[in-house]
Image 1 (cartoon, rainbow, N blue to C red):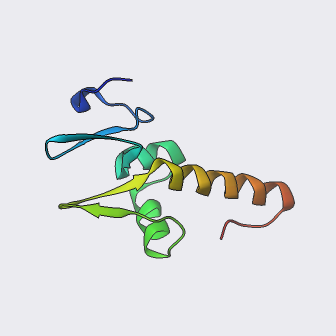
Image 2 (cartoon, rainbow, N blue to C red):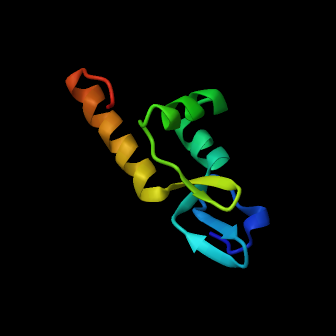
Image 3 (spheres, helix red, strand yellow):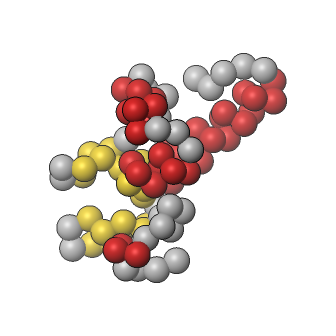
Length: 85
């Protein structure tokens, strides 16, 4: 993992916001790549409340913990045959 946001890859979990580096946040593009969904599907998930995004300045971000909880919930529901809530 690098502290240079310009070379960040999905999963690096470091984002430069203003003059500070924050660990544990994903850009929407990083979250989209991690979930392997389209930008339209990700926007729908956020709008429907399936996934919580935070706005910092002009951009939206998704917390690493939020994304992990969503994935854990989706995996658990896949095991018992239900859809994620």
